[in-house]
Image (cartoon, rainbow, N blue to C red; front, side, top):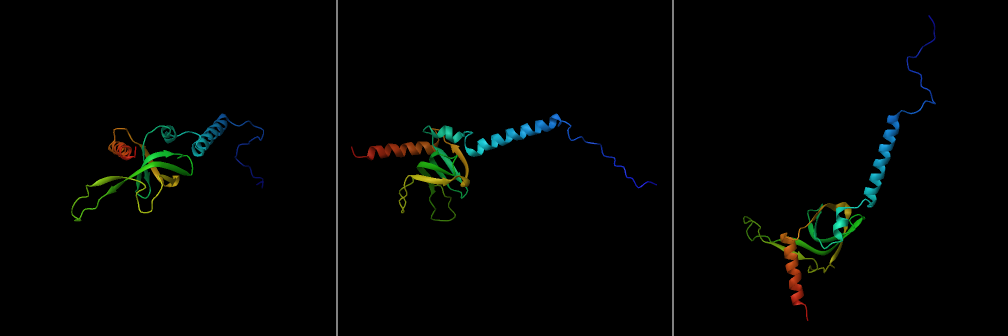
Length: 155
């Protein structure tokens, strides 16, 4: 019996051209990488970038269960800027058994600490953004507030 061992593996030539499927996979990976780069670098555009140029109000939902309404810009950056800010305040009932039905829309700035009407929001804490229609109750209330402010301004 011979000590020589034969292997049953097919011989592969080093100079043999790669199959077409190899190059197809390389091209697909390159396209995915390019799309990913554009998406994460903010150059691919976003709905908010398109809408923020208009006067549309947006609802910004945060991961701490807060929702702010305003005009959002720069959500493709590490910190998005929200201006013309409003939020909802639910009045607590006197009796715990009563439902909380009194909801008020509050303009940011009248709080004890006197914040400016601009908020820098860490993009990592934004869950999602909704663009509000002009006929939404929130936008109607904001426009009513703005009209009242114009009428109260000294002439």
